[in-house]
Length: 142
Image (cartoon, rainbow, N blue to C red; front, side):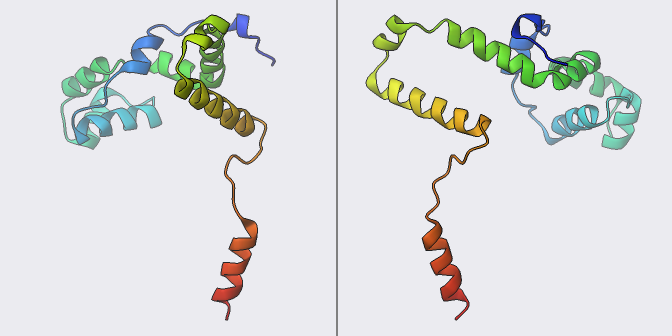
């Protein structure tokens, strides 16, 4: 199925989901990771596994905006959602904005765009001196 950028519907609270802080405790991280990996687990199930109450599980999931249906939908269409957001952001950048940016920011932005473009195209974005690698391998065989 080909999805067009215009067909992408925004995920509710996507801004909040992208800016949410990390859980403060290992237990909070464990609860979130369990729910993300096993969406069908109930709060009581996760509570038993993590040794905490279902009320605490519910509070952690609510605090970090973990909604099963929304999370599942977001994960399923994450690449399309992020591509749409990227397109929206890049479409707001015009020559005036670029010209107002510092030289450092322009060079850095250009380097990042080239790197990401090469990644998308399946090309290497790491320069490796292959002759040096071969030379090191040959020396280690001696």
